[in-house]
Length: 234
Image 1 (cartoon, one colour):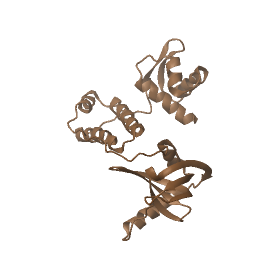
Image 2: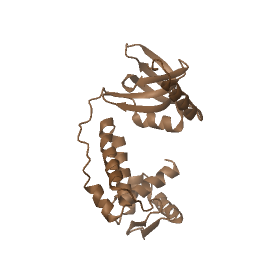
Image 3: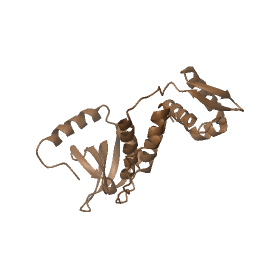
Image 4: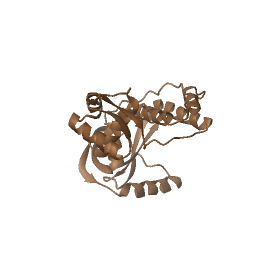
């Protein structure tokens, strides 16, 4: 695990878990040894986080420099809670959990009155999540490939049942009722393509990177999509 990701997970655990949190619990939450955990605690302290406690006693986060005090209007708070509730519509449980975690950290920085507003919002989403076609592709892999601009080798079955092997450069993921689609640059077709995730029978990293092409490809796709003409799809 990258050092930055590890430290972020440790800060998240210190925010979420009832204090004081034992070193054993923090090490389990972040997937490191106790020795590494002690080094990570020291790194966070050196970065300005006020963490009380010590080995054998437990730790408590008393001041978090990464979360300065926030202030939102009541309607902004309602919008945030509603938006996170709507993540259920994606059918992606990991994404929904991430949204709830982020919202909890935001609420933790609010003044008492605003925090109460967040606990008693009137705008709520009660829609059941849509029924989606099953897919086997690893969503964590797709997200990582998009973020880090990593090429994928995929085995794809289109809507007519035709199977192809191709290299794609994933650019974005689109959620809609009943479908999950992936926008990518297709090296086989030398063009943008929108793939149904359910048609991706296999996807794996091939060790190649398309950095820094993602931003320019998305910009060009947006310009093309705004012009008249049929959408690209597979």
